Image (cartoon, rainbow, N blue to C red; front, side, top):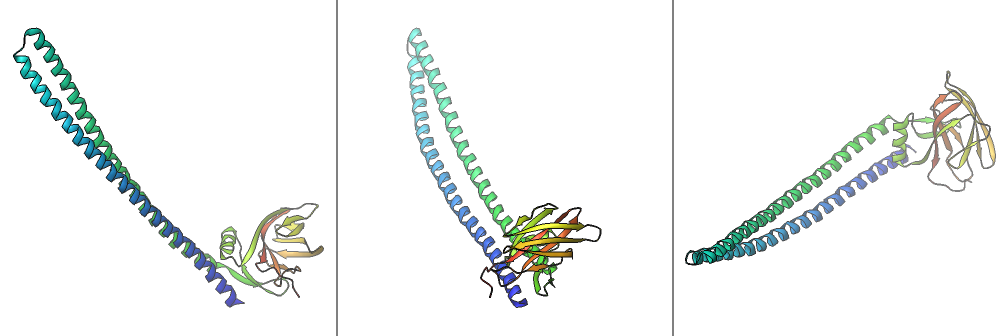
Length: 271
């Protein structure tokens, strides 16, 4: 049984590792796609900017040439014609200035897009690093918590699986995946309360002695578990499982108990 439990723990740990590695691989793939898209966008922007810049440059050169011709013509014209020519030259000068500003703005947009792309690539790289760090932390925490878990013999004389004594260890049990875990917080009531596929009725709770008495309702039968202590596996059989169900109470308060129900993964008819 110990070997089977340890194999189960290893399988659960490997499953967790595989999941995180797949997450890293997916993030890397997304980062590669994003990098390719950003590089393509930057290339297109640069190409568009280059064409626009060349067009604007030719336009500006043409305007400058027209301005020079207008100025030359103005010097040999009458006063009125000269005034009109100078006004036209002034308009051309303003148009040239406007074209130059537009071209500078386009170049600034290309630089800004390139900077944004580089920033996003850096962010994705950081995300991959964080996932790798989380993977290492998760492995270390799971191994430490599993090492803290203990196995004891239940009230039916059957050796229990790992027993959790607090919320952190209950989370580790869930991640191991060896059994179904149903947490509960039961107050003293007149009617049984549902926990997993059974019902539990709290009859007595003694926080000073950390003892309690409950009634378990399963398969239309009621079984009393009297004067039990905290972190003790309270075991009972149901018709559809070969291994016993276990109730573990971690806290006893006034008219209240807190703990969990552990049930076997394999639900079959017991001979």
